[in-house]
Length: 188
Image (cartoon, rainbow, N blue to C red; front, side, top):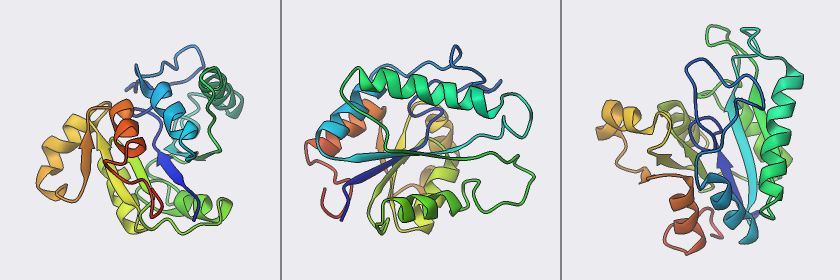
């Protein structure tokens, strides 16, 4: 089985914005997030990002701007010796009926096919209820960080998060996975 960790982007890896992250200049990593990703990568985990990007449908950014954001992420992570092995995004607006916008599982199906692995027990790190729902739907292990929308997710759904591991941020999550305090997959 592939050692794999799935991550949401906004609010987990980088600062989220109610006005949307529309350019590489606006994209700012949360302190410690890239270092955590690098630790996971150095420990043999492949990294996949699964992100809703409705700013595309809203004409707030275009595919070139989204590409520039992900290029910046890869460059900064590369400086730490890590890399993202796949970025999967939904370009649709919330009102559109699509199979890829979380909590739907279309993007997770794409991840499963790309990495040729069952997602059962693979860790999915997110900050929103939609991340938890999507992870559960494919049998992945949901992890919630308190960055981004994490605290408001805990406030709204706390009683429904009993089976969800909760960490302060991506760096703390990575430490727990790498140190074996919390497995990332059936191998982890």
